[in-house]
Amino acid sequence: MLNFRENIEIRCDDVLLLKNLTGSMKNSLRYGTYFEHFKKFDKILEEYNLYCILSILAEGIPYYPEWVEYIKERQHRYKIALHGFSHNYYAGMSEEDGYHQLMTAKWMVEKEFGVKIERWYVPFGRLLFPEWSLRVSERLGVKFHTRGGTSRHFYFHYWNSRDRLRLERLIREHGIKLKKAN
Image 1 (cartoon, one colour):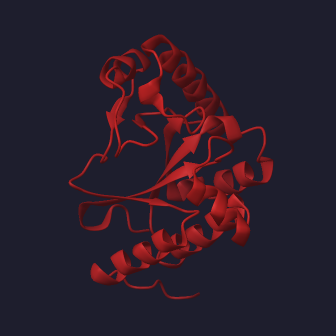
Image 2 (cartoon, one colour; image 1 turned 180 degrees about the vertical axis):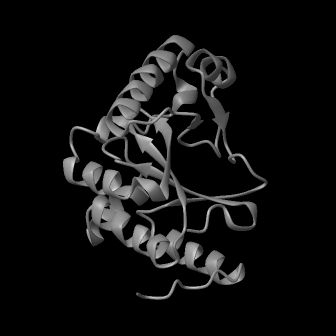
């Protein structure tokens, strides 16, 4: 398995997305469920034997048992990270509300996937980070990341067909070879 080839991290956001949808997210549902979109994205990762960070929204755990099992069956190919409880605009929350939501989300994801959450990738992070991000992350014992742990961190939204094309272009540009079929 290629593990951060050339010091590249690939991250997939909005995994187990349930609520607080943008117009683009809603539009993608015209072409399949979120789980169907995720499997299309994951098929690309699997074809090229790539490792990926999954940025999980905890609120979807009880609503998507089939998706959760799909991830668990392939968990050796993923690093599980926290996106939040819901797809909230955390910059609009108080520090205490953010802490309690994230604490609940962290506990749910760790319990469900049997992992220790090490990173939080905030939803809508390109727009504005909560001013309390670092303080709450420290209280939770996680790193607050917007770009990941490397200088070559690429994030994608599985539900966005253009992002699937971006992933394929990244693979071509970095000369990642298709694994041989057995």
